[in-house]
Image 1 (cartoon, helix red, strand yellow):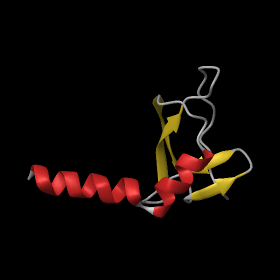
Image 2: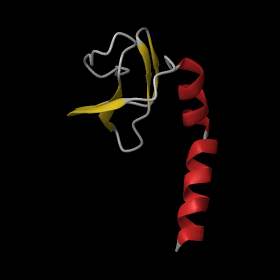
Image 3: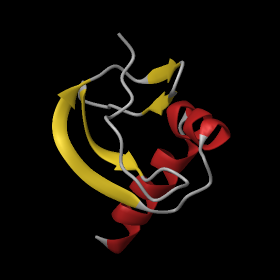
Image 4: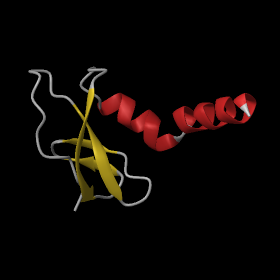
Amino acid sequence: MPLVLAIALFMGISSDPYQEFSKNSNGMDEYAFVNVTPCMTGKSDSGYAIAPFGNIMLKQVNTDGTVSTPVCKK
């Protein structure tokens, strides 16, 4: 079981959407739960969203410590 979890974690971190998110990240390692919001994975004017099932529920905290509306590509 631990091997399966390790492989799944590695594959998730190695995926193209995660790599693109890392390039567009603000560098903060803190996230907050937000209202589940329909989104598409991708870059928009205000950031990058990873929404594997068409919804987002975690938002990266802004550099000033606030949590704004989730970034969603329309």
